[in-house]
Image (cartoon, rainbow, N blue to C red):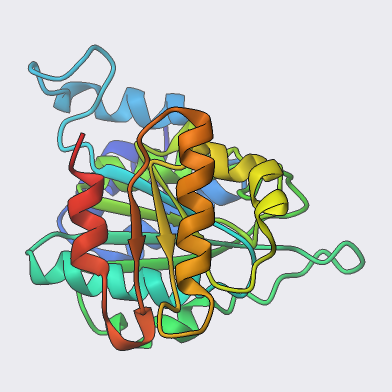
Length: 256
């Protein structure tokens, strides 16, 4: 299949793997606009499949970590905090930030990168804001090929930030290896928390803004809910604005 500017897709993928940010951006744009599918990427990467990997899985597949939660809990600031910690450990990191689109104009602000400016000059970090284009579930209809592309290009960690989620935006669990549900004090009482379907997909609960009143009550309510569900889900408190808690969250993600 032809990639961009008339070059074969495999050649453009190779350029992106070698750090050509323009090649990666062009491929991401094609994936976002339904012009590049997972099947296209698998076919182009077929000669590079790792014999030790499961059939159909490309070599150097990155770990996909989803982050979801209500608006205003500090997801973007926490993502920036996570990026800094992963970079400190030497990982290449890609970030996809999904923003809600206007039901009237179809446009989206795409403003999450404003909170991640500190990483803008780091060649080991790639950040892209994506409009949901009216797609329900917290992502966009083209999330899967975009994630697949970032994995095949060789990023070690791929962070996926959903739109501000309510009680039913759980699609992230189907595309991420691990899912973080980010909360903050003042998000509602225990009954509201217990009925929020998004909480059921968490591999780790992150209670951000831990320097604010009410954090201990929220942690207690989460623990009570976890006990009702009879499954172990770590609860980690963070204060992303102070760069506190990212290492603990990563440790919880890597602990079975």
